Length: 248
Image (cartoon, rainbow, N blue to C red; front, side):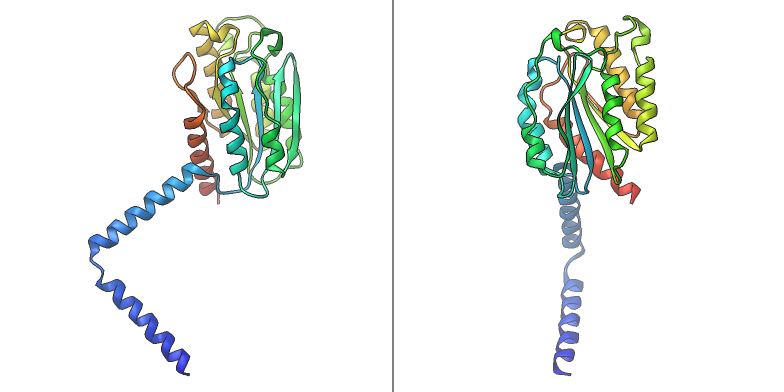
């Protein structure tokens, strides 16, 4: 009985103290909490995810400088997340790490890109379809992160290269059938997109369509290249958290 009365008294005291706090202080506290929540959403993915990271192998050597920040992103994912790492190279998908919950192993499987036309893929979307087949038995939030120039010249270089190729259509169809959202980071290759603004715009248009029509989002900085992936990963983290929050 004594402890029950003490508990009631303590609760009443707390309520009285809260009531005595000025409204301006409450507003400041609310603002701080809101800002803190926003920072958390930007810094770390909050919910488990099944994520395939696909990197085009003929991108410029600047992409190799982003291995560390990409590895840090993988390590920061929530426990229980599953990660796959693959490289799109010369018409094949080189899987460096099949889906695993060992985030450290996935992070360590990253390597420098070859940055050579000898590593140029037939087009990136054929290998995206191959990677999507790995999601057949995955449940929960599914996503692909495609780091690519997005350009498909397999059937020529003209306006059809800008978001309207057969393999891009197939990639969108397969992603939607497996409930996989595709997120894209644009980076130029050592080929056409590294020296031709029209090619770069065609590639970005394709990446944007792939992301938009699968429930993901495309990230790029201007029409010629990028500075770092840091802002890409911050925006990706925020987007994943916001989409998961809306879905729950």
